Image (cartoon, rainbow, N blue to C red; front, side, top):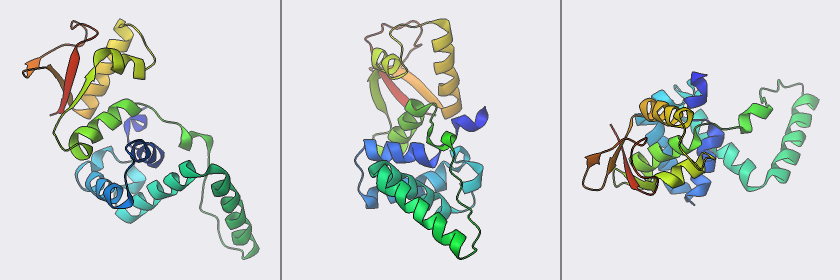
Length: 178
């Protein structure tokens, strides 16, 4: 369960693509994540920055052209088999799933992408991103769990602390990391 809260290479590739980052900018982002947000990186990448960056780049290649990527993967696997080399690439259906992505993107946007130290979004937009139109105790609980895990706090304009279960759904919420 806790592993689903960690950044995966696929999710990071989606975030990079969403923000239309060039290679210089996304390499800097990944270096910063590995250096300063390492606790949120999957355990297999925490000790090896190069492996981490290459895994994200691999997923970026997959996202940009899945058909070519898949055909090249099968050719590589065939070549490795022909030469008797061990195939260490594991592909499974769960590597292309994602969870808590809006909160991961929010944290990265606050810390590394927009460089303002905060992000703004209407509560309605946040709920919509999660697939909801209204607040319910379960949704609010889930949002607060994610805020707690990713160390995100909410305020209104003027740095007024707020609670997402009591503010108006069309209020602009300012998110910061603590």
